[in-house]
Image (tube, rainbow, N blue to C red; front, top):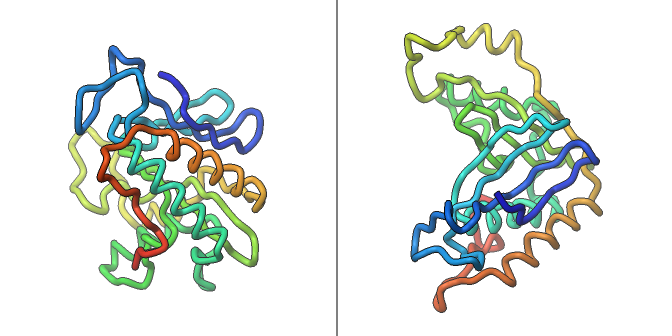
Length: 205
């Protein structure tokens, strides 16, 4: 796997977008080539002291342009966590909202990345600070448990909930990450009529 972008927290902790070598490349639009294409399938990985967790696999467009949008809106103070939610509790608030079938928590305003292993990554501001949260959602919000799964009920999830990690991110670091995304999107191969997602026109952001 070849790194495209690395969002560094510190020397031992980072999030990284990777693309396979050509022999393993997949593209949802055309035949893969050596050059990075907007519809190449890429993988986003969270690395914490060499323990790597795959968070997301999607097209370069969805992951990079979506991340850039979230970064831009965070810097514009458009992703402010509600007063009644503590920093580090975004996944808990999301799980409670879905479980109780109410719409008190609009996850689209704060969600960044999601993994199939029910690990969510959130980006938001709280008390004039920027936070990146990695935390577990309740595994059975949208499906019933399989017999092989180590099932626990929702009340137990609430009792034992804690974020996997909560990082305070400086505006300068977020600006750097934004520049990284923008640089890749400016140099990436795209179909002639293609337009990147414009987060300034998004009703969800």
